[in-house]
Image (cartoon, rainbow, N blue to C red; front, side, top):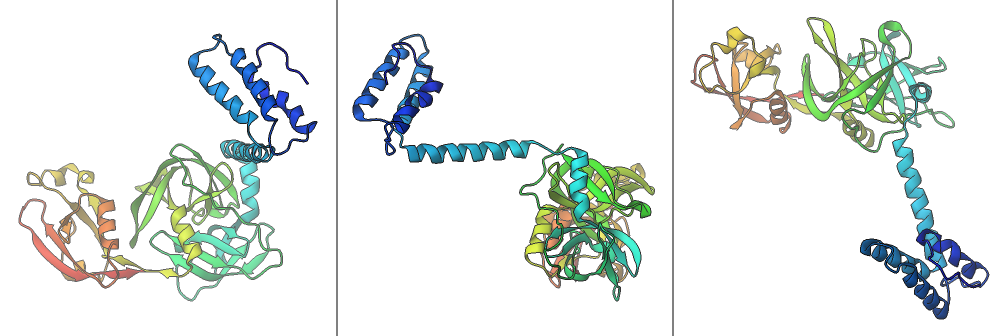
Length: 391
């Protein structure tokens, strides 16, 4: 076979040399040395000044690599590129909301406590592990059941609990072939990405809600009587959707519906969502997780009303105590609401997240030292007490 004496488009080189592979049965290499030298000469003449230096360098070198590459190597490279490209394109294509709903509905469940619909949930493992919110079934001596998509009602037992993220895992009875389950996403959602939730608000069954990821970093929110660590999705997710699975545009789990932001009993369109990392951790290590708790809640200084801020001395920093749990060390120490906590173990505290992180850096039973002051007095005093346990 002879090649025409004119320029050879680089992208056609594999097609031109392919017959040498097949007809000549030269599987280890594309061609003999003589044939390769001839092709190299043609390639040099094909790019004789009509192409830029960069283009010459790139295309010429690629062509030479192709000419000298074994068939086996070419085959595996092609397969790798096809698989990688297909995977990238697949990750970029989101399902329509209707298709997401169809997928999630198969695994979505409703949680019954003592026979009454108490919240939403979803199967996240084919062995029958159900994800829901810890506050959905938080009482003792209760009967928990799960209502599947096909209306089959099954008993459930507690498999794992993480109250610090409002996560509860339930186990269903064994079933031949397993249960329909929602797959877990492999990465955290990006801010601005689409999110979907299936839940049963106010006894309206299995509705689909849409949302937008508003913040993917973790923050602490006080859900009386303790803090939970969540991220935020902009959405309307009313009462009854607690425990429902938030999924991305591929129908993969990204979080758990915990609660909503309310002001004066009015929802503000911000959902509190337990993060995927905490769900995965509990699924991999199922048990009841215990974390330290101080027994009080705070607000940041700049959240306070004008009449409070007017009392502050110059340079005041810290967080303001707003809720004290009955029986907690602060109640016993008769610390009033409105007191400022300036530091914990000599670490300055200025935000709600910093306060929760400082407490949870300890174990239940550890002793901590708080420095507190009144808003109109710079004098600080120390309070030492042992941390309680949240589980």
